[in-house]
Amino acid sequence: GAWIYDGYDDFLFMIEYQSQGKNVLAEDVEWTLWCVEDGDTLHYRSGTVDNWPFQTFSIWEVGTEPSDTVTELESGARYFFGIDGGTNTNTGGDECGPIFLHEEGISATMTISLPDGGYNTQILEIGRFEVGAPVI
Image (cartoon, rainbow, N blue to C red; front, side, top):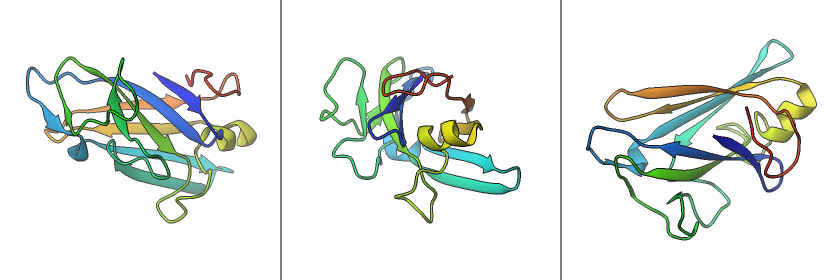
């Protein structure tokens, strides 16, 4: 799942990590967020789930405090992590974030890639525009 977070330029994601018993380091789980503005301008951002710029926390297990950041993902556990809007060259921007998608009337694509080759891709669309609203 995904939700709109704080300043309308952040996403909060929840993932369930399944690996048939093999744990991975959070720094090895990568994500890519991209969207296309006006049909021809590609905005792109990538990172790892253990790095949420401009926040004092990054990834934590569901049911714990955000300050309880984890470094290793355990099979069967659920985690929250965040992604800011912006691009790799404009990390303070809002491109592909909730407010940008809402104002442009477009969707974004988010992919999570695991170190052993597994991945998951989700299309992000803003239905209701408010903090805490689900992103579908």
